[in-house]
Length: 329
Ligand code: IPM
Ligand code: MG
Image 1: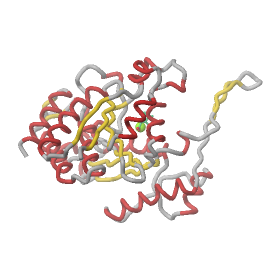
Image 2: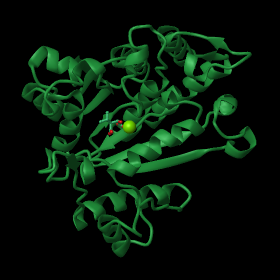
Image 3: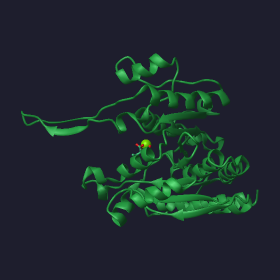
């Protein structure tokens, strides 16, 4: 039976990078006979323009019915002034939460070819291969109450709430431990237990743990500097049955959207994660990773990872090079 993939390109550079990832996905589909069927819809600002909301009910229904979802990125300055409840990001948070995608896996791997693009010295960062396990459907992103109001003295104030229940902690910790077991058996806790009650609850239950929604967001941005560029970081957001949504860790980069210069590799590597985690197609997944490594060997670089002695290419040229490399494997 065929597997249904729902593609949500989103906003900003989303459509450009997703177009390249789709080329790679289609080739992998033929080459490895994966039986995937692709369909497209909108999320974020693009959905707001088309449906009046950042995630339409029919899109959510399609996402529920799909076997996996590939997402670009959402957001942009043109939606800064609209009702906060309709902002593009709300669509992303809603699809994550409605589909129960609580486990967000964000691997940060340094390709040796990009060692010079890292913020750390090559000899320090060599061999970097870390996995951030980010809780994705709880914490401060979803906590209530949240409020923004004017105090009696005329001053504006706002607050958010950071709640975590034991069961939410337990299920993400289990993913962290399971992942640690098949890697180096080391799990590192990122929290603020010396101040925050929510962090203290995590610590009471486990000596070691993974990271909550907000720390995970910040950490993955920081980890990207080690890998040379946030344009290199893929991610998988999984539910309890490994149904997943796959998306690059970076945002919609409105400042460079439409110029054909964005790095599509994080989205292409997200396709590889999809084949590995949702469809257990580790051979096809590894082939995509090899193809990415091969184009880096060829010296091809988008602007974010470009350095002296390499060849600067645009989004489509990078995608085409990965397709060619995959074809020739
Ligand atoms: C990410 C993004 C999102 C997040 C935004 C776009 C809501 O930064 O996936 O890391 O904060 O989760
Ligand atoms: Mg982020």
